Length: 378
Image 1 (spheres, rainbow, N blue to C red):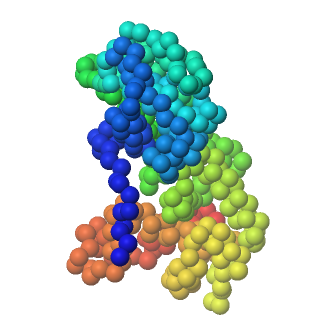
Image 2: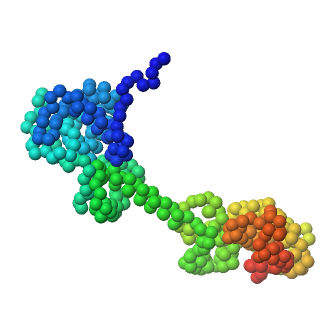
């Protein structure tokens, strides 16, 4: 039976991987093995320079291509853990390197046997180091943050706080870039969550005074505007959108509703009592549907509406208008109660309802039907 592990496993330090990155930890471990088995490294003070070509690296890292090896080795250089004295790997296909194990170098490399000399490496302090006041994230870290959608402006805003925090703690680290990456990504996600929370519509939302003034200035009834608020809030809360421009949306919504309301309904100038066989016009149900009010809910109110006004005998210029306003008010009242109480008492026994709810159920038909604008001034 073939083994699941036909090759020698690659080992690396989990804590180091968490600090500098998984790929970086794997490459660092592989290059350390190359250094340990090298026949005759070129010494430069405390540094030991090694050479390895694409064949050896291909056997060591068969899962990476030339661009990957160049990318990860450059990341190690940026983190101060590796020194390179060769041109870009994708071009020359070999690495001339030294592991920066923390011992300072007092010399520079004078020659590179059998290989073309590239620009001399810049000595970096490796191991755990304290953060400097002028510390800046390297380009690789900035690119990673941009891939998370973080803006450059936000990155710059986080720098002073990050540096000050770690200076005050007096701690050292292998790679400040990795710490900064985690810090900024966490802060960015929290920032985005705060924006979304600020943009969401609350149950208690109401239009601003400026929005009300705009609507009143074009002769829309204040009572009509106020009756539209609950249905507007309910619709957008169910959609879950975070628009952030609620006043503008509300103005457009009310103007559209008012236009249909005034254009579609008849407006006879001669008041008349409610006919015994009266039924709302289809325009009424169309307008209610546009306001996302259930047609079945509207029809359930029709019998009580007719009974009250037939008994009352009062004349009106538009029974469609009265019924439309009645349905909108009852719909808004129903959902306002459910949202503030947080409980739907409609299906609970009367004894389980709060006293205020039981008292409300006992209200007379006259009180419920003559409340608010739908039963006055029309």
